[in-house]
Image (cartoon, rainbow, N blue to C red; front, side):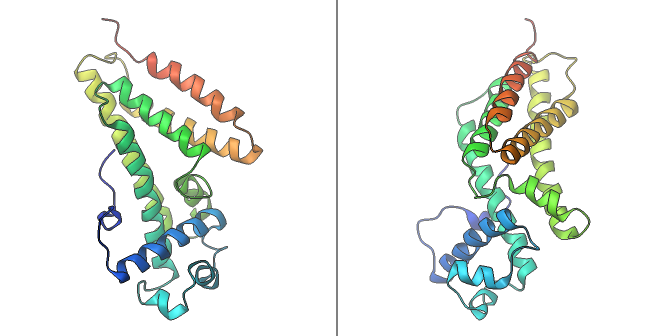
Length: 212
C-alpha cells in the first residue's frame, strides 16, 4: 500500500511529552468516533476517555472536528501499516491481491481500531451531513482503489494476469465485496458472511491469472 497519509503517526523511538499526549488523544478518539460516530461522540466523551480537561485537548487540536479528522487519519494509518507488513516479500500481482483480501479479513475479525472499518463507518455516518469527513473517507477509499488498479495493471503488463482483465472493475469488486462482507458480519454478529466472501474472492483472484 502507499505510505501512511500521516507521517506523524510513524513509529518512532523517542517522542516528546506533547507528542505522546497527542497520540494518546488520537488513539482514544479514533476508537470513540469509530464506534459511536461523530454525532454520538462529545468532547466530554473524549475528555473522559483521555483523562484530559477541555483545555488539554485544545492545546493539541482546534476543535472537535479537527480531532475527528485527525483521528480518522490515525485509524487509516494503522490499517495501511498492516497492509504494508503483509506485502513484504510478495511480488506477483496475484500474491499481492491475496494479501489485500487476507488483511481485510483480519481487520474484520480483529480491527486495528475498535468498531470495525473506519472508512465504512465514516462513509455511512457522514453522507451529506459532514462533508469534511465524507471527503476524508472518499480519499482513503480512492487510495485503496488506486493501489488495486495499479497492481492489476502491472500484473497485466507482466503477463501474470489475463489481458482482458479490467483493473477498474477488479478494484471495485474487491473493495465493495470486502466492505459488504464486513458490514453483514458485524450486523448479524457472525463470521459466516465474511467467510463466504473470502471463499469467493480467493477463487476470483486466482481466476485472474493468465493461462501461460
